[in-house]
Amino acid sequence: MKKDILILREKIDKLDKKIVKYLEERIKITEKILDLKTKLHLPITDKKREEEIINKLRLLIHNPILKDSLEEIYESIFTLSKKNFLLQKNKLFKFKKVGIIGLGVIGGSIAKAIKFISPDVEIYSLERKDKDIELALKEKTIDKTLPLGELVNKSELIIIATPIDSIIPIAEEIANSYQGGCKIIIDVGSVKEKIVKKFEKLNKENLDFIGTHPMAGSEKSGFKHAKVDLFLHNPWIITPHKLNRKENIKKIKELIINLGSFPILTDAKTHDLIVARISHLVFLVSKLLFIYAYETNKKWLKFAGTGFKTTTRLTSANPLMHSQIFINNYQNIKKEFELFIQFIQKNKISPENCLNIFKKYKKIRDRLFERKF
Image (cartoon, rainbow, N blue to C red; front, top):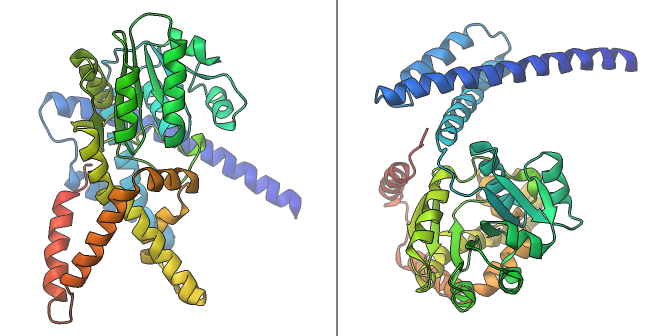
């Protein structure tokens, strides 16, 4: 029996190799089509064509589960092909040597995106025992590890992608290790006011510390969950201080665009107010909803379906990262939470008004977050 399983697994392995090979070939052909469509000023998405493909393939399928899942599978393939094209066309990468400190989901995704867009860019990380660094080296996403001083003085751009509480100490070490040349240092922390104030103090003529925050992430952590396309079509906020050089802000804008994101400039204080509402409050409500359901009657959780699981997904996010966010932006989050409670109490949803409210905000949300692909 065990031998039969091994024989069948070998057959699956062979099929999987063919599937992957054909998918890569399909992506390459689609890239050529999308390039031609761009030159002809045609939209890259053709819904009618996509529906025709799915309908034709459905006729060939006998397995009902596969038939029902085919649209979802092919929507992923269509999206993958478009993401590949959109990132591949971004070739104007100004930096040749980049140091990334922290290779979790954000730092790892930046490294992967840079290597995908411009494979000749040298990417360094810190020389230390770390499973994320080891995996990034194994996958050839980074080129080598260096001691901090050497990383600072070799890199043109340094990205600090560590938990919030370590950003300022690392920035201070970078400033102390600096031996000359023009360097830009950015962070990707999600609370900015305290960091940007420190960055302004550390700034030197050729050592420019710029605060940034990509509005993208995952409830999962570590390099293994990093994605090349994580930033595609998501905002990336820049929070400059008065000593930042205009030409360096421009370079960071170009970097953000190359990674598939779009830059937005605002001051650090405003940034922290905004993210308290549209990011940190969302995490808190997600967490509280799960805690409420669990603590009041955990037996009922066996009835939970996709709605509850999706809404409380952020509860599974990195506890250390989110506790640091909560502590560093506590006053803004507290204020937003109180305003949210007041809003709920003031704007009652009843059997009489629920349909109109649900319809109204469905339309608004659908329009605001319309699919990009």
